[in-house]
Amino acid sequence: MKRIKIITLMFLFSILLFAFQGVLGFGEEEPLKGLDEPKIPFAPKKYICYRTDSVLEINGKLDEKSWKEAQWTDYFQDIEGSSKPAPRYKTHIKMLWDDNYLYIGAELEEPHVWATLTEEDSIIFRDNDFEIFIDKDGNTHNYFEMEFNAFGTIWDLFLDKPYRDNGNPLYYWNMVGIKKAVFVDGTINNSLDKDKGWTLELALPWAVLQSRNPDWKPPVNGEQWRMNFSRVEWKTHFSNNAYIKDTDPKTGTILPENNWVWSPQGLIQMHYPEMWGFVQFSAINAGQGTGTFTENEEEQIKWFLRRVYYRERNFYEKNNHYTENQEELGIKELKETEWVSSLVIKCTWNDFEARCTDKAGKAYWFIRSDGKTYKQTKDR
Image (cartoon, rainbow, N blue to C red; front, side, top):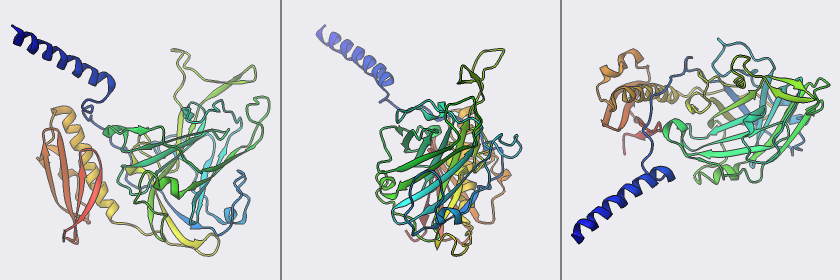
């Protein structure tokens, strides 16, 4: 009798433990779901970031000689691409670097500059904002996001992997040592006049980026990082000298924000790091020469594998398991590029890894079910 009671108690305890695991979030990860594929060709924007040996005063004005000689990016587009309406207001950025900092200057045209959030680590995109995304290794894991409003209030976080791959954002991570300033060409939070816009100037210390990735080092000449920049813009109207977000007259819900970006994503989602732009660092000082952007064929290999990853994820969504059968995934439609050969897929019911060989036959490239890409030379 005692044994039956003990077994019963153990059974009830296991049920309670399972329930608490679900509530507290330390049980198994949520199953990975299907994914929307970007609706544009793979053609991320490119930018060459030149050095500066000048000491920059971070005042939001971008008025030093080095800033004037740095190149502007193209104006931002809609996040989905050029097929969507052009943004109402212009946005572009420029960058510089030295041994200690990455410098970013953003210029945002805005006839009515407003902001409400003043506490750091507030959810800044509830205001109009400017956002930065940095993935040094270009493998879609271990990247940074920073958001700023026209007060210069910051929300900064580190993600071990994208949300689609059950990523865990670390909200407590802070950009310690950042220098930042905003210059408003007009008057903030005054609906009675018309402004020209606002400029954000940042100095991001390499050391704090390294804090989450000890192997990271400041860039060297020719090194390329994956980065993107985004602007969130809400449609508003004025009431009692306040800015009120527009609502749908039928439902009363707030209208969706506009998302304008440097390198289009092909869908309304910034956390597809594979679609971010390429920033190449040059040892040439701004204004003293012109570098040449180096095309990296490895990115085409990674993109081929990324499309295999999309298809595996969507196959799993429909069938509750992955597959090694390339016909079931329609792999032939992907048309292996001139850089790729010998695709092999290995999987269990809830995990997969795809591998291909570069055309030179010197290295294997992999992508995992959690989206991470990596390279392995054949002599290993």
